[in-house]
Amino acid sequence: MGVLMVIVGVFVMVLCMCTAVLRWNEMRYRKKGLPPGTMGWPVFGETTEFLKQGPNFMKNQRARYGSFFKSHILGCPTVVSMDPELNRYILMNEV
Image (cartoon, rainbow, N blue to C red; front, side):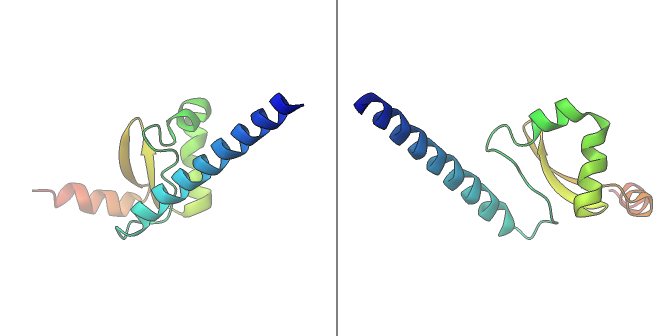
């Protein structure tokens, strides 16, 4: 009975720590004035979802956040633009 209580206590602590880390990560990126979206877990970001879903990941993000959103994919914080006119403007005016 005592061992079960310890296991439950450790589980609750880990859950609270994970929640705190996720909230801290979101607050850190929210202060930078980035577009809507989520950065996922620290270090991994949304890489696991990106690899699992493939092209559907981008479709889902676009449906949720619009054609301009932030993400954290393959170890890099990323701002994604799925707007052809904006992409053309950025690429034509890049110095």
